[in-house]
Length: 250
Image 1 (cartoon, rainbow, N blue to C red):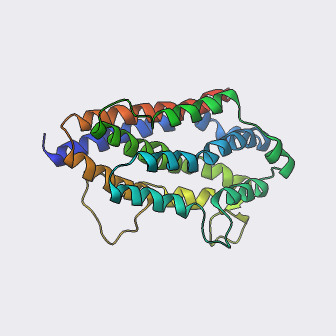
Image 2: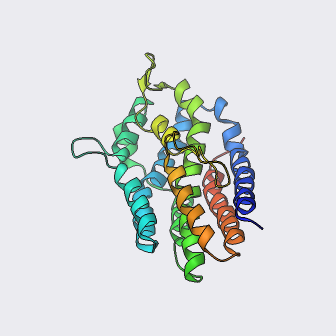
Image 3: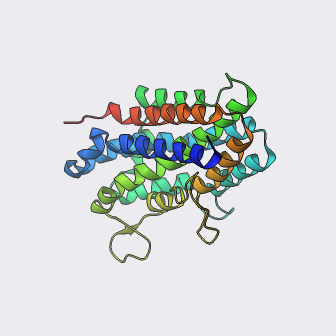
């Protein structure tokens, strides 16, 4: 299998996995949820966001290629902004407050056993259990799928209901401007594909930058790297999808 066909095979499987993720019953019933029901999900989802930084720190320790390590480091640092700007985690709290959550709700909430299990499984995906090349494939795939593509997908699915409850996109004069969900929906999204033609004029999202790393790694790795990448992607989607299993679907 030539390189382009191999990358397209991964893209096609990514498409199917993202479609499977989107089909979770919780997303299908968001429109009928009350504000309080929706906030329960968002408050639990906040703990996955809080795990973002240590997951990236662990991945940075694991990545062996200097350029790929620098890419992950740059993405992580962007989560903190400048010295005078709020961190993205603070921006998340700002959006939750705009949606009607109280500070007391936020600071007194705790991660459920299901949420803790999902976080532990994501950390587990960064543990080395295979040879070095496949381990690097696993780390890059996990960051790209679980840390970026699926995050943007989640926020894309949540956005109509976030907007219904009072958030607005930048430039919209109605509602409270979203400083977390909407920006992440945009800068985490997949714009360029592993097997697609590169567009140097298009802004590079976090996913696109990791796509470049993964494409380069797979091109240099063993033939079994493609199949292993797909298996890792399947596991990443299964773990992230299981987060929503804890919420009622009827």
